[in-house]
Amino acid sequence: MTRPKLSRRAEQLNPFHVMDILAQAKALSRQGRTIFHMEVGEPDFATAEPIISAGIEALQQYSTHYTPALGLPELREEISGYYERKFSLQLDPRRVIITPGASGALQLAMLCLLDAGENVLLADPGYPCNRNIARVLAADAISVPVSAENYYQLDASSAAQHWNELTRAAMVASPSNPTGTILPREQLESLCQLVEKKQGRVIVDEIYQGLVYEQEEYTALQVSNECFVINSFSKYFGMTGWRLGWMVVPDYYVDAIDRIAQNIFLAPPTVSQVAALTALQTETQVILDARRDEFRQRRDFLLPALEQMGFEVAVKPQGAFYIYANCHRFTDDSFSWVKRLLIEQGVAVTPGIDFGSHLANIHCRFAYTQSLEILQLAVDKIDAFVRT
Ligand SMILES: Cc1ncc(COP(=O)(O)O)c(C=O)c1O
Image (cartoon, rainbow, N blue to C red; front, side, top):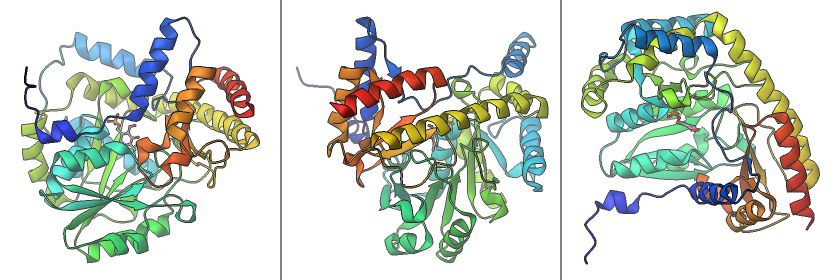
């Protein structure tokens, strides 16, 4: 029988290699093995109680209809107020667009900025979906290798080197996934200057905002009003399953994005939007900040433990909940190595290859989205593995 035809984009879309790891981890769990999950990119905490209560109440009040495509006006205003409280920034709520997760925002940004054949610059290593979203749109993603020297972040000179006549945007994430590193403000300033001169746009993914451990945080909106700034209720707010994010764009793009959102998503989820009003309240943030402090404790435990075993981490991760470790002392094929780590010791981590190709075979990502007790057990297992 001939296989039904798939679109070329469906054929060519890359899966995450970590999905193989996850499937194997599940199979091992079914056999009764204990698995230590350090591959998961979401907080282990359940959504905070006040947000859950607000969601239940929203349902009881029948908040079950569509909202405008750009989101509930009250939420757009509340987010504008959030920037004022956190960064003393005045932001016209019209520029705030509510989306189905940061994922929805990334799609809207690329749909709005890129035509087929045009391209966006991305850091390698970086968040893998960006590359794939660009490809689905028949656009190109140009991977720019980044290293410890520039905090694993794009900078103006590497962006200038890779920019061509079909480049429309440069995309950064700060803190970054997988490295947890922050884009220094001056580095973003010079990147914005370059990109604005080229009449492109900088897309700044601030999804891990709020999960920053030492430095004072800034937002790209303090650097330039020309950026697309993406954020989400998934990580700091602990609402991954509620599928809600937002994006702040220059006023000029709002109407176009409204048209695209109407057609692609119709509207972001209503119950989640009502609950998000509570997520943004100062009282809720007391709970969320305590969780952030717990993440920091975990990083402070895990980072030296990995270094002691022989992993190298060239830049101390300042945010998110990841450690991107160089494992060249143990392997030059990190994908096979993480598979063996899972089978032999029951520890699941993400291979470097999921984040790009630059030195991917000697890196892997550890997520500290587990309690300190579990991390301690996992560390003992990893230690036993690297000693064999
Ligand atoms: C850098 C980055 N951007 C975007 C996303 C998508 O998040 P969500 O759609 O849940 O907001 C993730 C998820 O892990 C991420 O790490």
